[in-house]
Image (cartoon, rainbow, N blue to C red; front, side):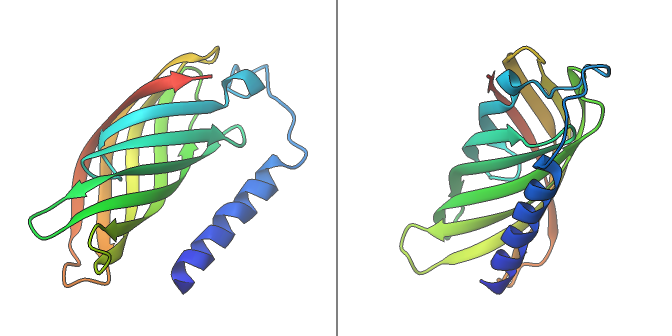
Length: 164
């Protein structure tokens, strides 16, 4: 729980630091228009395993924050991951590289099993600067915390949605 509080504090501090006093940069054609900062999308695999529904909000020229909820089904667990991710993208004219760092809290259906997953992602992100189609694909490296499994697991992901 202490780790989660520290991570949330860092994420919100970054949000406050980057959202104060920034002016839109129209000369580089980077997505900063207020009409195109919100994205809702469906994800398959990736940092919220199996499938997820996500909300992504651009908070500065190169940073966005994602909140998602999904489904995780294994041999011994059925759970619902709740994911918070900080994304950094490079020169997002319409597309570009995206690097992400996230934490997921997996809540077991039976209420007895829950654990955290830390993920680092390297993705290709397409997002129209005028709104519309959103597409993302890449690989997330995930590590489960507080279980007997400490291996880093690479999981490919595919997401599609709408930006508005």
